[in-house]
Length: 452
Image 1 (cartoon, rainbow, N blue to C red):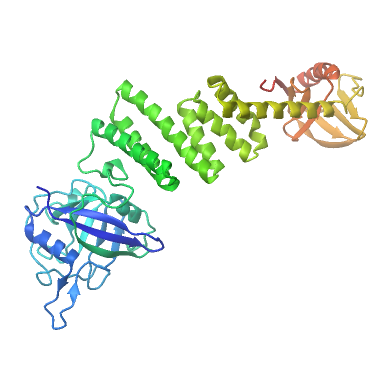
Image 2 (cartoon, rainbow, N blue to C red):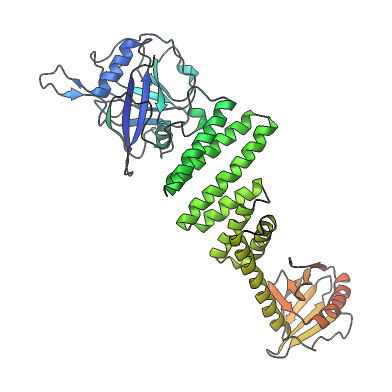
């Protein structure tokens, strides 16, 4: 039979909404400790003359040690130096049946034996060194994601969160889940109590993706993204736990679906950089996936990343090869095809500027010029190796590498960041001369072609 269930509604300063954490108490093992915690959640009327109610409501989380614990419950001083129980100032230790075996355990903080009051902590990891000194009296059954968010806050040198974290409401509940994104499973797979085995992880992955898909269908894209991120964490954990080839293949398929769906969420918000990133991750898992390749190309086009258009062309070509009848893929494939044709036409126009001006006079230099701009370039040998690039009689730099592109008959000089295009009938003559010049001057000449 489940124990008493208590909840905290926790507000992190600067956020608009609260997060609910639900605990289940071990009433049958440590009843006195559990009554104290439950009473403070509901609020207890004081025996003092003023008869005020005291409890956890409006108290702060005052201590956070990432990877260890989150502590609160100082309902008198708010800084870890005070506290009060429903039985008086303090009460005795009941027993230490439960151990600090993992994250999400609700425990009593104390200042020594038999000094329990209102202060509590939740473990963020196993803490065996506290066994036998602190009572474990409950566990988090929902909302561990809220505690992880608190754990990730900026923490000062005295372990205090730099941001106020307040329990705005609390009490006893019959709920088994909280109104957060992580109703069925904790945000991180390692926070589930008990830990999930392979079969349970597979089931969890399917259900979490279902939640993410439903958020997407209802246009709640930010929530959908958070669920897809959660799903990826569960997939990663499952892959670390199994060597079953069938499961590994299934999870590869699942990862591609998650990345593609995450990409679509970013399409809706117009975040093309993240579209490219998510679709790129899908391509890493499945290089032939048409949807992933298509959206990488779409993102590059939308961001007008002209220098990446060759990359986009390779992706849209892969998408077209896989799904040639898809209307959207065909449309984008045609756009990039036309763009490339236009670029080649522009290059062709530039090529016409360099005509009948190539001079090969001797074995130490190559001269060429542009009639329209009257620019004159000379490539000549240097003593000690290398070639100098001279423009209109002025040396512009030393060259150790020349790149020749067959597709557009162009020369590229990487060290200088320069590129010159020649007419086809002169390119071969120039290349032959360059090879002679470079071979005797320790200069590398490479040839390549643009993708068709």
